[in-house]
Length: 434
Image 1: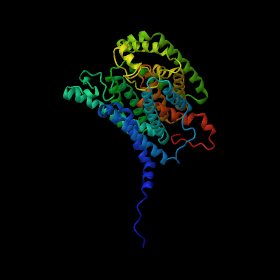
Image 2: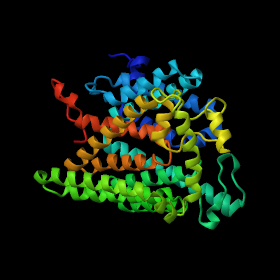
Image 3: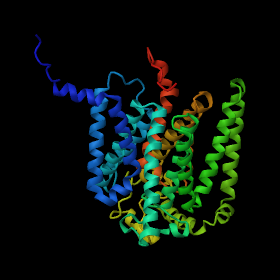
């Protein structure tokens, strides 16, 4: 007779859980949900609660990555462009006038970068799209529910979230995201994710259609003039990719060059006619707020043009020069309301150039993958990057939290398919979603 089965060794059991696909899927949902819900979590728990949750996610992701180390392709793990930018931001503590804020800002940035790398390494692109879709269905639904509660049922603002209950006037609304521009950004990313889910047949058509309607409803109720431009850019990019994907491979390079030339000309015309566009969109007052901030920032940039003032990420309000900018413009700001100027201001010309290289490589690689690979899921990354980069002209969301997370996920996934370092691998593995 055999005796009773021995219980599994506890460390082995924990390792088995951390290495399981179900744990990775759940943790991916938690990471993406956390990144998109930071404003809600800060409002409920404050910075200590938010940072505590972030540390827990990093610990869990570290354990899961160690447990799955045999199944992860480590060759060419991280694009060099990401490393250069992160290292330069970290080095800025050496000349920063607010060293503690720089250390905390870099740590916050690195934590989200690590979570993005974890998600990109352990999940296929379609799994990331599905997780993003699941999270945004919940958060957009919660946003609209709170707006209805505030505006229709209670007729009172939800002060701690900044919800004014303007849904009775059909907007503008902001939901749980802190501003109407962020809600517009999230709604566009959600719409892209839901459409990819529909086209890839990864969810039922009825659920996908309802989700798309939810995202479009949220976008329309923001009344944000910024996202008229962003949505137009996404639509044009989607049409260009549709055209490219149906063009024979031997003719595709010529079409790519034509699209590049057209894009450069359109950007030039938009810059020259920016005043007319602003007036057409009735965004004059919103633009004036930004331009007054940008003028003062350009004046301060001249004091530290090469190295910048030091990385902070989300602007601290009680140190110079951010307190000075609040005093001059008459209102507090948590960012420069322009990602590229924000990077230039914080980490100078060197940091700006490394950031431009990072986003350019991420976009070019993901665009080429979407142009040449048959599965429709490859379209998700370049369209999300279009949203993030066009929005960067009016917001700095791409530098922190969910914007930074998505940028790095797209960058790492694109590098897995296009990085030159794959050619140096003695036995490269095929990506699961190829």
